Length: 468
Image (cartoon, rainbow, N blue to C red; front, side, top):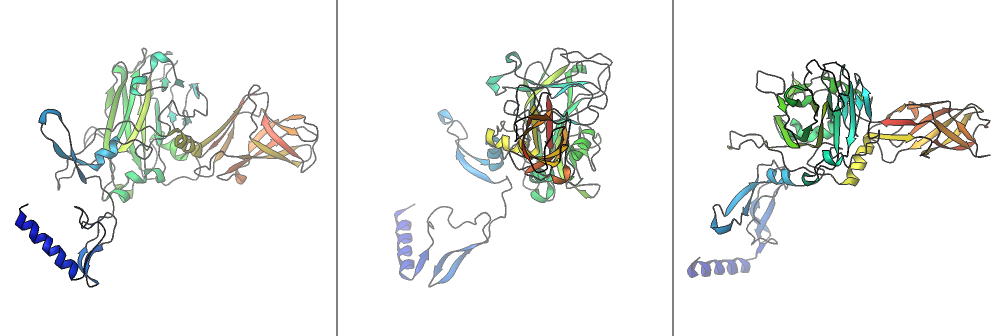
């Protein structure tokens, strides 16, 4: 800037000030007179209380296509020294729970409330939960799911400190085995058309996988699906999870097909050793004119060739992630960004709270006796109603499943144990904060007498489920 121009600008500024020209705070900054995101517009400057520079409204939301200037600091003057970066790229490589929509995908911090072998040599023709928030299904095959912490199977250098092991330990059935996670509508909103314009988001599903030595799938193949649905949230927990895993949820549509004419996701051959894999698709606004309401993911084996399962017939998965990418835009020339961002590891405390809002599982036996609630005798010498508070408010009112009686109440009068000969949930008394159980017992207790509720000599689980 030459001296003459600088002197002219200085004089103009002093003259404006003398005429009552007032600058807003920071008005001399480079961006001070630009529109502000989410702001309806403002007066940048005024003369004698009259606005002379009205700044228009900013955009309502961040789209991800906005760019930020930065210096690359490449050594030796390498080109480019300065460039722009889209904020969506920064989102993809930021940490935190907001980017990864999958809960419990770090199997080291997953609670595994149903045990470290939640499914053992079982045909899950009705969907079963395994690690927290992860469902498993097979119409006819035998499967086992285990938390794998064997050092030789892991890779701490790439952040894998535990894995989910999915195996077909026996049997000759050839049907596919699937694990997956379905998001309810509230957790799907970030990807849906209502939040992302005329179509939904570009979504990316990524995960690490490692085939076991005895995996009998042809070419070590698996299939990774991103699917959407148009069903409403069910008030009955587990309903949409079961139908999603079976592919029968209303509007169920896989959105990462091989082409516009091939509606099934392509197979992925797993390389030996840990590697990261990803698939991507664009969430449609509607399926058969019905609005898309939710999204989920599955990792499946293809149909097996004729074979007999063994203990090592399977594969490991870890560090799964579902995130938004960037869709292509022909108007602006924006290319699609479909590469997954770095794995966003959730804060453990947040993870625990999230998992407990979907499921709360009490496990007990002769060695580890829990004291999860308090009971009141409702029918003399016959039954007591027990209240169990949850550690975290659940997502919706849960259902109750008791695997076996095995629980006891302790009479306050004499500290005698009274084993529940039968134990069942009282669903009409359940809330998002607590649940009720009816303990049938042979004790000699008067109506209204209070008792502690705790574990007995028989291993048993009580599951309160608020899964989609």
